[in-house]
Amino acid sequence: EFRRVLFRSIEAILSSKIMSARNKEIAVTSITEIKEFSQETEYDIALILGNLLDNAIENISTDTKEIILKISQSETGLEINVKNTTDAEILDLKTQKRDIENHGLGLNSVKLLCKKHDGFLAVDLYDKYFYATAVLKNIL
Image (cartoon, rainbow, N blue to C red; front, side, top):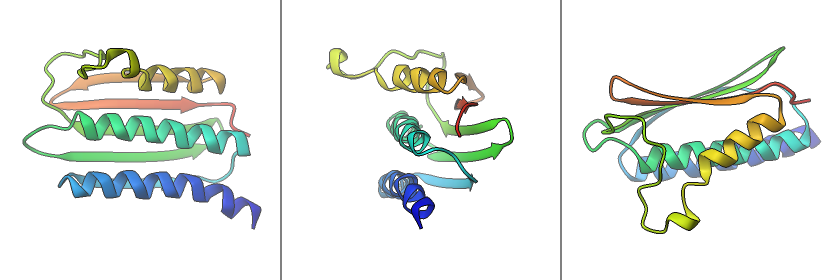
């Protein structure tokens, strides 16, 4: 029973963000393969998902609106991949919002959470898609 309660926070974040994307007419594909992790990791995963999905929704292409989310777990750790269409032509991670002091912290916090779990965050821009991959190795 306790384990099911833990997974609920991740499910709540996913449901909320996917609903928000679909309300903006963004097609969302989600593949989730999670087995087990610590309670502290549950919280960190929820924060990472929230930040990466918010970024994907905010920076979606004006033409084709698509987000693909894949979460997979192996014996070496957990990998979260978020891929979204974008109009960006160069990889510029600076916030586009006016309130620079209170924005642009999302990817930095994701990097810190990944580092906390002996992992990393990788981002790339290729063929009209923005890719964000968060890897967490120390999750149990």
